Length: 295
Image (cartoon, rainbow, N blue to C red; front, side):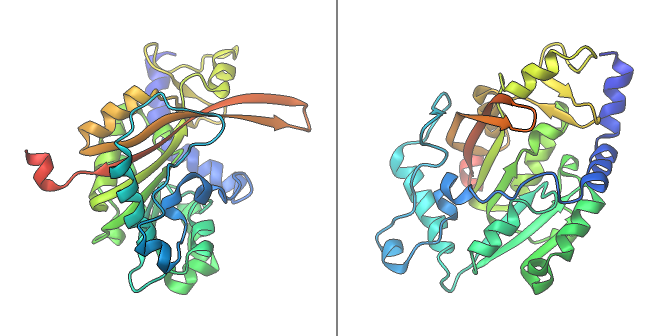
């Protein structure tokens, strides 16, 4: 694609997502009720289970998952999961979640309904999306602090100052920004996590059926000849990652890899009688301590 259009799509990324949410409101994406099944850290556990150190099971596994990335040893991964599960268990301590690129709340509201002890900091660069989040009864009840902000500037919005979350969710967010902003986005993410905090990540994997469909389009859709970086018909950007690329990105940003693997799904459009083979990446990254970063 000509350089002029590449630059224009980058500059208008926030504008195009704002138009998307004005047009679709909260009707396009479905609530992600499956997150507790994907990530055991988000499942509340009983006191006996917490005492026994449970809750640290593998996330994103099961049928259809292909472990092509890196995984930390089982003991360390289980310990990280047990700590977050303990915080989510409804005791004196609460679980603090940072939702980066929250959209209209399809991730955070199902989690809030499931976890009485959960508090969420959330932001998105669409004013309309954030307005929808703020109007939700769970936000009005004081369980959400939401703000308009751009992940790619490298810092959190001022309204989220002081956020030191236990866990951050990045759900189909990193792929929506330009590759030269990935580092800044992860810098902002890290700034909102406490030491040892965990990023739960889900995004598009290279070879996804949607990528194949875009590449087969008659109009130019690829923005970079050397990367799987594409533009959709509505002007929003999308990127398709490899596990190796993500491991390197998060490593440079000060994270250790707990899990990074491909998962496969098939989606069906019954109205059109079409099926699409989807390829996602499910991953977990833990923020290093200042001491380990300096060593």
